[in-house]
Length: 139
Image 1 (tube, rainbow, N blue to C red):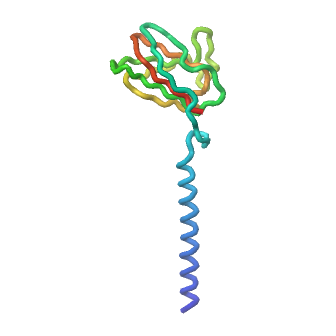
Image 2 (tube, one colour):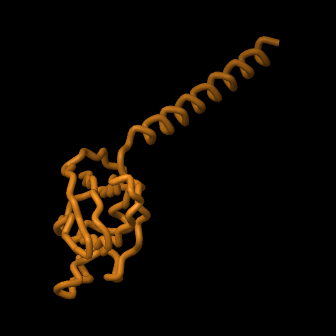
Image 3 (tube, rainbow, N blue to C red):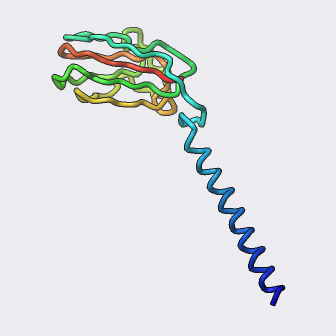
């Protein structure tokens, strides 16, 4: 009978140790900041106006960013076109995307762009109507 109790207690101790190990692995993953598992800090935060019918550079070419965030904050719902690269000089290789056309970001929205997908190259935005942008870059 004591051999059976010993085996049960040993099994329970092993299972408890395994569960604690797995739980600690999950908790440590939650504290990481960016897709590359490197904690991120805010490097740039600024407000800028763009438009009407204007294209401006909002991020210069960087080699060390984890994400970029763009908010359209004017409350009028003015959309912007985000261009990955600088179309004025044919620069389409400064980011991980090979498309200079970019995409449309709806007005009164905030969008986070992961550097692993969109890269850290020069970005420009075009606005058909006047709008205010809040931009941030995390490293």
